[in-house]
Image 1 (cartoon, helix red, strand yellow):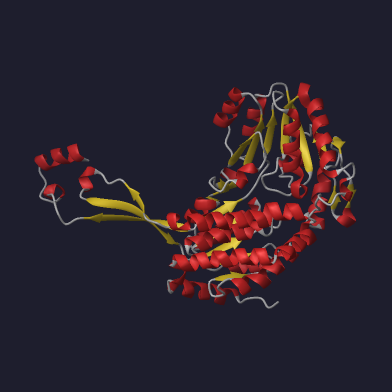
Image 2 (cartoon, helix red, strand yellow):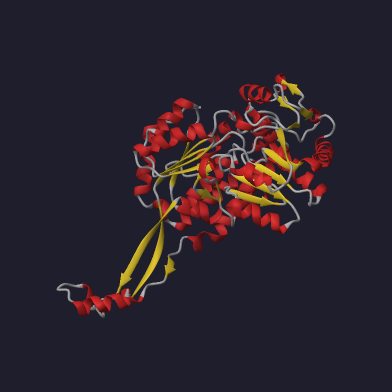
Length: 458
């Protein structure tokens, strides 16, 4: 596959945007419909590619990637006309007669840099928002998920306007060259280290950025909970995609008196989902590459592994694993795990979990399982996280009316649904006034009478 000339591609996008073509709502809807057609006509090929990259099962590939995107496109097509309308706001008395509104307009040409763990969803979902808002875009899939990236690079030119949307494949060299170009917005999904590089590059052009990062997502489990449902939902949200999910629970906090009961329930659910040997399960994923496999294996060194821990480097397989009470300065407690290792931390009283969460950088997601509404309010009021799930894991992702984004070290900005449309739009301020009733209070020469009236009116 011939690589695009990056500088020329960006210029072409900028020229296309300057023609005004992408501002037409009908054109945008057509591009979104074409994107939906791409996903439906090549569903089987994407399922195969996702299995090749991450050993995703057909159901997991469809629900978390293809089906997620189809739902996102349908939601966007249904609401796009309303999102794009002028948004009226009130006009104060002193400015009357007049009307005030916000007019959404596209930013221009945007860059979307995706991640390898959901290699289809994490480039196409932002692309849906960028198209909806009327922008041109370059998408850069991760080079680690080779099969999915190759398929996107092959298919997108067949379905979308080639002068408005392009795919750049490659690794560090290509990403570096992309970041040297002037874009009107950059959305990056990935880790904190690369995010700093993206921000530094964006600063050279004063380009705004949206950063979707991660961190160690805590999960607080109260003993006053529905234990069976709680264990099912934690096991599902943790070991989906072999734990390679930015909003997967990273560590669970439980009371010491409850830990044995909780672990027993959790391991029962793991085996109900994947069998006694998850390596044989068609529903259990694999680690993306050897480097990440070695990183995860290193986390288990000298740890108290109370469940799992099976390693097969040749198959990049690490079984569902539970580590109990690691030291606070161990790698498994200092770094985002991003794999199938779940850490359990014990406390004397569940309220101490709040202090533990607050001692760490703000996470992308925080989970709480409890029937205690008082504890629920304590956690909501006293902690900060990009997203919160109460009595379930990751399901906030399924609601297009909720924004998805981080806070602090877990990211900045948000997208999904209208929030994605707004991220890739400028809400232009418009005030239109009548020529009638042009009161002279604001004009010189000034005097005390004018000032007194202004104090009353403003």
